[in-house]
Length: 70
Image (cartoon, rainbow, N blue to C red; front, side):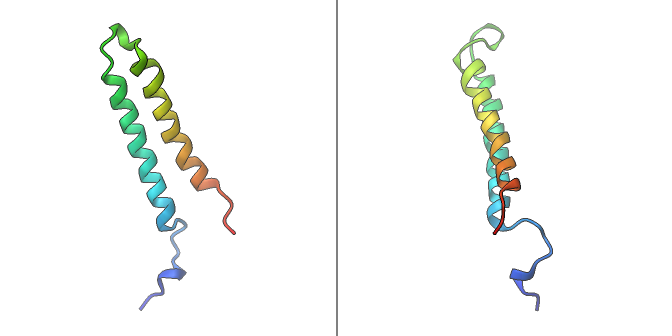
């Protein structure tokens, strides 16, 4: 029986959950941008809140992948 601590997979469960959370936050951000009722999406949701969520969804997995493991 294989030892689960001696896996060849480079990511552990916590890192995979952070990656999935980042993807979900990005999808929510894009969805929030579509909810804007202003012409051409120039309201608060399309210009401010949606892009901030997408940016968080991109930065979160990058930091989780490049963090220094001790």
